[in-house]
Length: 590
Image 1 (cartoon, one colour):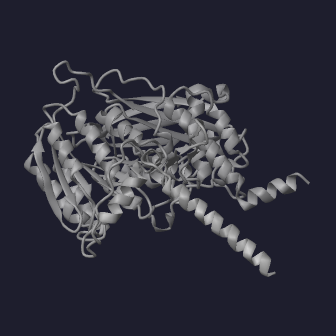
Image 2: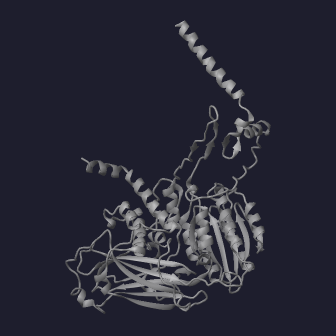
Image 3: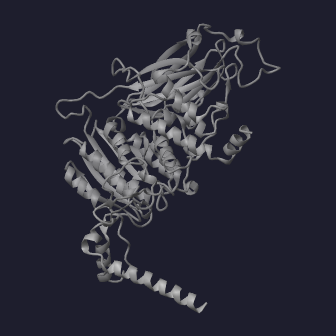
């Protein structure tokens, strides 16, 4: 026993001595081969040795902005480590250790979700009325969760925002007197052979390029309202805000003016109105995060600055960049909404841009934008920032129609039952359609709006069984015009108008007989709508799977559409790991 103990001790001493000699033998060239998050180990050691002990009263410095941003990195935590090791002899090995994706906890995030729209009987409720919605935040936010390896909360998914994230082959309007075109088409439903899908599409006119300024739009008075509270310190928040805002500033013309207001424990003016792009970029770069969130005070100051620099006949808009964590100051939702409505009526609109996760308050972000005649988007990457504030800048900034409402009356001779896919939080009462005092959604230049109804043709098997004591003598007693499937009406006001205008369009019943499986552009729109409903747990999709959704939307060349296909695949993989799915698969294999 004693000899074994001595042998073990000797072996251990040899190992320690070998490690020590290897460490002592490392030269500077070896140190140069080991890189962790962009800083040399040798430099780190030197800094640690000479640095004084930290002051416990000093606030930590904010993290530097990332040099580049790509989709999906908003949900990544940890470090990308590249280790370059000198191998024996002249050979070198350069293994790559990928970053670890840690899903965020949605438990503290706030959403204002609605139940899936119920089925309507045409005999008793033939009219469907809703406000348009051009927001796209729900799609980008859902992408954040899926990129992080988890399903988005059902309350965070709004099917209409997923569908409206993409562009479709709708024709341009023939003139600006009618600021958007109206398209209707019909297809068979992939998940239910007894129903059909009616699509209604709107497309706003594009701004013609002007030889003088290259934009073809009025001058813009913009206020960047940036949340610099402590909750904005992570890399997917304030650093990304800087990237997004700087990108927008680079695309502005000499006639535009930008001011920058920040808020944390208090609000302040960082940059007075200027057209100097370098000044704007420098002011953004100096921003750092800390303290609590006085969102209400920031809004008040931003509106004051916007009013001081108001451009008559121009674009006067505040762009609010935040995670929505309003916790100091005017934090009552009703008070905030009242404030933005008053300023909206005075010609200043508001766009909300959401960033980050963990404590994200999307419910407030969307409500504030809706009442401010603005739009809401979620920015999860620099690519998304370029899409919203670059490619779609005219749509984001310049409104071509406001208070846009859609009303569809179904003919009971042709349609027995129907339901609207999405738009649950945009539903209006029938009498609201003709009431010009009722606020509704806005459409920007080049914006598109898509709504999809699932309908049951009269005589087909519907979701609701026939009633024993049905009033009347059947559909024939209520026929107005038997050849029409439905009648579509739209109301809108011009940006400076107070009285609405009306557009009417009949949908011919002959489309029912010609309805075939969706193809091309229609197939992709249906696939996105099905994806949204699937994520929301819509029971009327039956057994329609993520694989079938992906197949329906395949064959796309557009980058964003191709990304959609990948997200559907990710959702399918996550869904397959659910205990219920695993149990079903095991039972099916027995």
